[in-house]
Image (cartoon, rainbow, N blue to C red; front, side, top):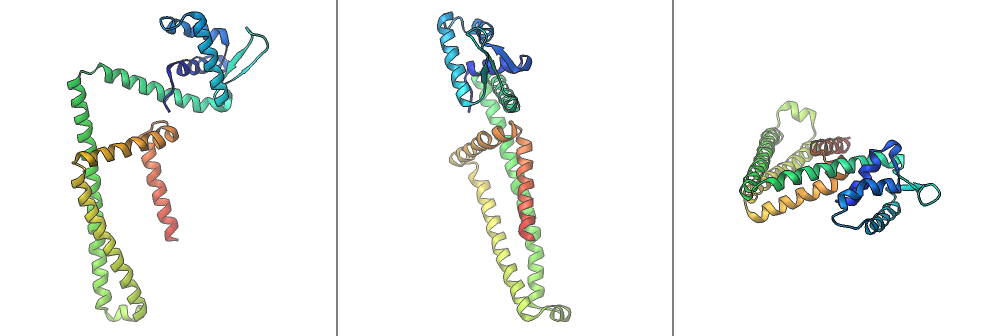
Length: 241
């Protein structure tokens, strides 16, 4: 979830201070110049207190001390890694927004067109790999099917009729799945060029980034994909045992 400007400034001020803590009036005095066009100092103090209270209730920060001027707000040690990642991610978003806002409408169109072309190219390469692998497996499976249907003396001696029949059934089911995969892959490649399909793919990508890549991998898309690939391979290995 995107944090607002004041929350970002408070967390950044604390995170960059010794022991990740500051007296509340130091936070106010450090941040007020940024907000003085928006608030009178008294109003800003009220808004700041409300925000600090809300952040305490969420568990992100805490406070200690006695007396009005001696109250310190701080980030608990257990929260430092998480808040550090949040700040890095927010800063990256802000820098991207600054760059994007500096583009003219035509430049934005060109950038989106380039991005779409790159994503589409990656999608087509992936599809080509899937089709190639499916073709290889299909050829090998068909060769085994042929040998099971017309067994040599060696195969007849090695496998009983019942075993050959079971193997044949499993291979034929596998071939049916491969044919379905090839059809689905070909259809997906055609569908991607449509507006509806692109919007669906874009929404899925956005949701993946927001719910997986950003919160679990600090925005590292490559690490997220590699981790998912590893998990998929491990699951297949576990099923094969």
